[in-house]
Length: 296
Image 1 (cartoon, rainbow, N blue to C red):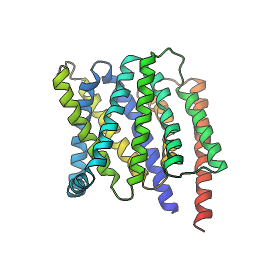
Image 2: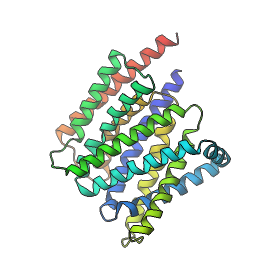
Image 3: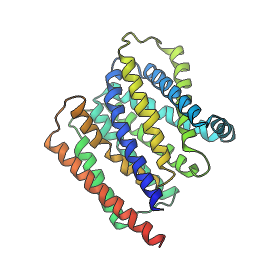
Image 4: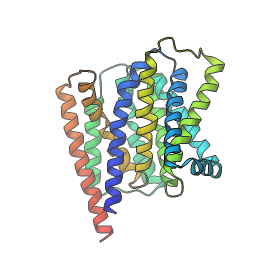
């Protein structure tokens, strides 16, 4: 069990690391393209990456079999995820992405709530303390003073709520359906829906081809690596714990902003990073304590 715990923690942290690169690269392209156009190219690239991955791992037949067998579940997740992603990208178009990032962190609270209600996940006192500290640290890092539009705030909260529902569904079926198949179908479905809507409503051309490299890098680190690691981690630890571990994402964003964008963190952001690390250490310690007692 300790080995599974370690796998879950590592996968969740790798998801956070990948998600930080998604933020760095995708924001360079999103402001000059429509959300539908962005989604089309974004998930076109990620679908190609997943196709290559499944061919190399010999899982294509498994994916086809699971897609047919669980088509209703896959379509449900695909629809929810499309609405979640579109809402998030649209919110970024309307207001400051840092403010969007702050409100999007509410997905952690939603996942904890759904996990307790529907998956019977529980927190001991030490885990609860760690969770509170992590959330406080995330707020410290990501909060920015600003005036997001009411509609943008609504879109961001909607995206967070929908994504939390996806995570709970995937966790519920993670023992019977390969999470990698969920991730692959998600990319294909969002790409197909995006391109259908794009041809009917918007211009399908990108005028600045230099943006394609950022969209490709964003798709590699986002819907491919980030989601792949996230969904796989759900096989080993509870959805609520995975979500809290992924709350370390702002720390990775902070470091990558320094290295790639040459930005300098404020004392408040550094303090927030330290608080998140403390909370994660306490959370994992409390989680390991429960497992040791349970499987002695």
